[in-house]
Length: 301
Image: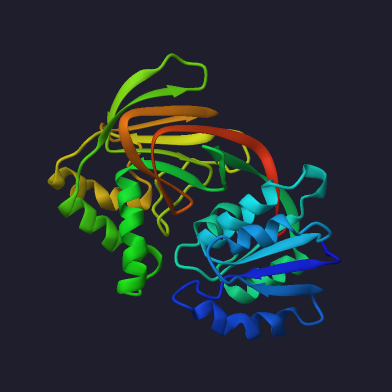
């Protein structure tokens, strides 16, 4: 793929402000390789606005972490399908789970080369209460972990798997509780669920690399669903390494399935996260748009 007119949307605050420092490096790598315009975001929500106004561009590149990609995706999805630019990713954030889902290289130089020499593939997009997501929805404990990770990212300047692992340990020791809800998958009858975590994912990881749904396929038109029963602290700690490695799926408290949609209703607001953004609602309507976004990825052999 050789786009004629690319737009780079850069979140300079990503990864504790380190992204701003690598902008000159990105510009040098792209010089003579990819015609483009670079815009730095100025506040939360700005990346979404820029992507929503990107008609006329062939490629819109999110430069930052999962939060930046999330905003850019929502901006792009507001455009008509026939006017929607292709998505590109330069992963310079803390978690970068979306780049894992799409197979974008972690190395910045290789990711830049992918923009110029890669191929375009289409991937599924999730919708939760009107918001789009390209990697994961999770309700319950994981949302508490995400909220703590947002705090630790600023106060302790951590990133990657270490950021989410330490946030998880804090929640396990201080707020290990599940939630009860009425859940309906696809066209099935609703049923009552008492659970610690309920995750519906497009990609296989979240939280900087936790392999919560190792069998997820990002373009098969289905969510990979993981529900984990409430656990005691010793049991949760004993299972944690298996969750990190994706070896938990056959454990008795774990329930894996695949679905196209879900409705979650609770008597009181339940914390949730989509692509690392925290929500607090008593009703979640989640559905899947098969192969609704195109992204530049490395060419397959």
